[in-house]
Length: 287
Image (cartoon, rainbow, N blue to C red; front, side, top):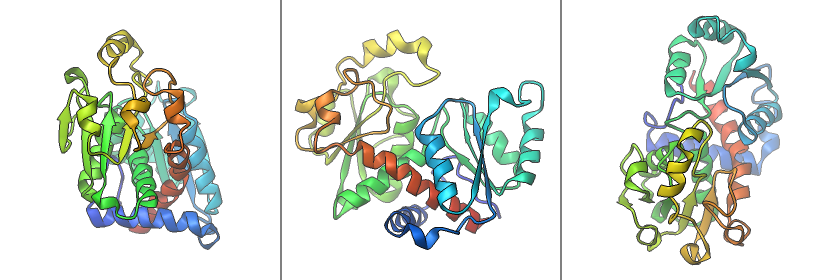
């Protein structure tokens, strides 16, 4: 039976821990996995532009001995063809596919039509690969990660949704501070409109850009709602700082926070590659 990753809702605590542990092992001993995707092809479907997602997946597949093909959806037959037909064709060429799209419905179409595993590399509702990279970073950073508390500050977006799902599945406490108009779709352990309350018992403080790609028409409204949700030195205190990047410095986070010794943003970025290697190998094994 094919196992897809449209989100993290259908993954157990044990399954998520196995993926995280594999990501950590791949990072420590990359040579051991050098040929793990030998003769395997990853198709990468992009509706949205990307830096970390494309490079981490493409480099990851290459370092595992596989081959990655980048497809810009705007230059394919998508506009005139039936997407299901195109996915059915692609899944006869590829061993595994990832898609970075605007709407979650597109991921559902990929999943229904494909005969190979599908990875959601970002949509409007979820960002599971980022959440797993974040959890891997937390597991590397502190001795007892399951005793940790994460405070997410800002827009309750796709990153926040997946972070909540991953944290609660793994038994990690997560607080969210967001304006009522921008609350996440999933219920955290503690929800407030006060950032100070959210971080009071936190080990990690996490934020994301206030205006995600595709939300430009909501910029003015979001900027107004989130003006008191900036992560600065006072709010961070001595806690670890996390951000999925790209960051808009001076908006959701200050320069001093992102450049501080407690900042984990570049570890998170690197771990995108390692955890995506683990996701690909796991789904190819489960196939």
